[in-house]
Structures are given as C-alpha cells and as structure tokens.
Length: 380
Image (cartoon, rainbow, N blue to C red; front, side, top):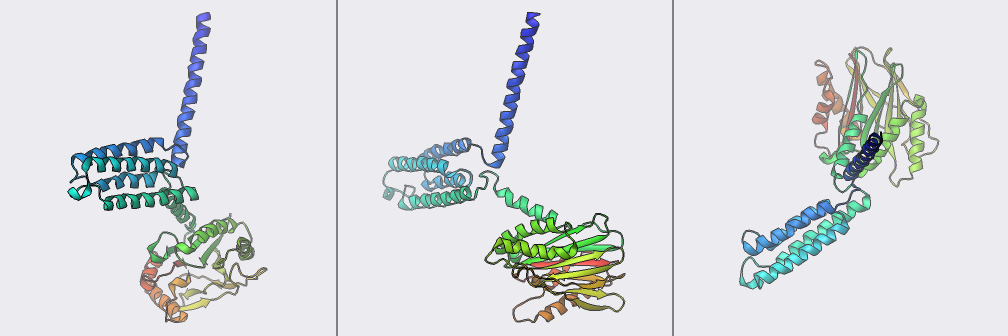
C-alpha cells in the first residue's frame, strides 16, 4: 500500500512539473510572437557571425572586405532591441580593430580597413539604431511587427465587404488608394437589418489622401461600422458628426453618403454629409439622374442636420455612389467628370454591372493621384 501511495505521489509530482513546463513553453511562444520575449538568442546568433566574418576577412580579404560587418549590423537593426544592438555594435568595433591590426596599414593593399570601410559600417549602424529606436518607441513587436499592417489591411478588407443580397439584387464596391498604397482615406461600411429587408451602406471620404488620411480612416471605419445598424438611419450621420467633433483633429472633417435601401420595394433614401451626389440610371428611359442630398461636412458643425433625398430602384435600375477622386481632376469641371463616369457606365447596360466597379475606376480614374471609391447597387 505504501509503495502505491508513493508511486501516486511521484506521478502527481511529475504531472505538475510537466504542466508547469507546458505553461512556460506556451507563455514563451506567446511572448515570442508578441515581441515581449528576450532577444538574447537572436543576439547570440547574429554576434557569432562577427568573428566568422573577421576571420574570413583576415584570411581572404579580397573576397570578404571589412565592410562585410555591415551585414550582421543590418540584421541586428531589423531584429534586435536598441540595448542589444549596442552590444552588437561593440563586438563589431572590436572586430574592425582586430582586422586593422591583422591586415596592417590600409595604404599597403586594396583590402585593408580603410576610412571608407569604417564610414560604411558606421552609417549602417546608425541607420539600424534609428530603426530600432523608432520601433521601440511606437511599441511595434520586434519580431513580427512587419505583419501587423498586413493583418490590419486584411481586416479592413473584411470589414468593407458588402453583405449578401437576396436574388434580384447586386452590389459591389472597389477602393483604390492614391499612389498605389495599401491604405486609403476612402472606405465603405455596410450592413443588413436583422430581418434582412433593409440594406445600409456608407461611403466616406476622409480629408487628405493615401497614408496621410489612413490613420483617421482606420479609426473612423471601425467607429462607423459599429454605429451603422445600431442607430435609426436618420440618426447615423448625426452620431458620426458628433464622434468626429470629439476627436478634436486639426484636419478632422470628412464627407459621407448614407444609403438606406428597402430590398423588397426598391425604395431608398440617400443622406449626405457634404458628399458628392449619387447618380441613378433609369432603365425605362435610359437616362441618368443625379440624387443630391443636403448636409454639412462631418466634424465641422455641432448639431448639424442632414436631409435626405428619396428614390426607387426598379428592375434594371442602377445606383452609383463615388468619392471625389473618381470625378475630380485639375483643370476639369466636376460636372464633366460625372458625365464621363456616366458615359463609361453606359457601356455595362447591355452586359450587366457585375465586375463593373473596378473596371470603371480603370476607365475614368486610373492614373489619378487621389483615393478613389465606387459603390454600385443594381436591381437585376
């Protein structure tokens, strides 16, 4: 019996140790990917390359010049924290001194430690230190920080997806940031009501363009996505305006257009906050009609009022909502840009508007240095 009890205690003791070890490994893995773990292992691996490069430089100076020490310094600047980076720099300086002593005066051969070699290594070291300090100051994880923006971009794309519509309806949108960047000052958020009858979509153009407006656009897209569908349609723009005013941004205004569409009857209402009018194609007559609602810019006036304009999408009708990057150009009147957009959209009447959003941007605003957004809603 005593042996059985002792064996059970031993088993429990080892089980607890194994459990603690698993927890330790798990915490280490989490810290590694969050950037909170120690970087001594990385420092050790990179530091080991320094004596290898130093020995190679002494033995084969023509093939491995002294400036090759810039390679581990560059790797350290991308991976290590500033404190660890200074230790790496100290090791590199020692290696340079040793190479200089072993190779002799720099005037006696082409592969000596010259002042130029020292300047190259120093310049790379200073660049790496600036990068590491900036990364530490903004709190970006030091190992996988480069994936944060990619992950954020993908989340924005998911958030901007339009909800699935019932048979007989089609909606699509396309965004193209200025300068071919990944982040835009334009964004779209959309949702359907709990009973699936009402589609709400908001297209917003934040002041500025490209990366200058990206941070504000990211914040607003999340806030607007939370407000949309949680408030009555006529209360959305007022709530969005109050949100912008509370931010106290120096350049904090935005324009926005809010579509509220009844998917059963086709009746809709457009509410605008200083945004460009939408245009509707009437399939019966083949004519385009501007739908201009009234309202001030978001983030400018307190207690602003927004008055909508109503319409109906019948079979074959199309509604286009767009940002100013689609129709504005230097030296061209705004109405000319809208006419050009409608003219290009006429080409899709016979073939259908599926896939038209991206192609319309290509046709009318391909090389425009501004953010471009286009939302297409049509009733088949």
